[in-house]
Image (cartoon, rainbow, N blue to C red; front, side):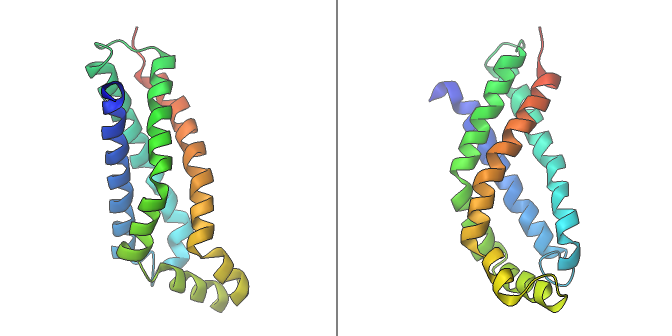
Length: 158
């Protein structure tokens, strides 16, 4: 467990960042009056996500590898973080949708139906906890792998 303590720490930091991002989206109206802009602005979470991975890999390099880390070690570190974050997706999604922004689904359904983007039934099926959970369980590891592949290039030191 001590070998992956840095990864656990940064996975928790990543999840906290995600929850804060969702709270910020709610505060700025992206889950209500500006829900039409949500699909665009929610993607900006990639910036702090990449930064968290960068700081995580840098921290691992400094604390565990004595300042030297090859690409494979960096990649493995990122992949471990991705696995931990993916395992915690159900909890993170639950906190987001039931505590931070409980009206998100109803707002998204209303917007989608009102503006002819989908039927009521299609919107209810798409904007549901089970569908978002499946999407998150697929997207999180894919995004984590891609981020790890990229960030490991910039954090390696010989």
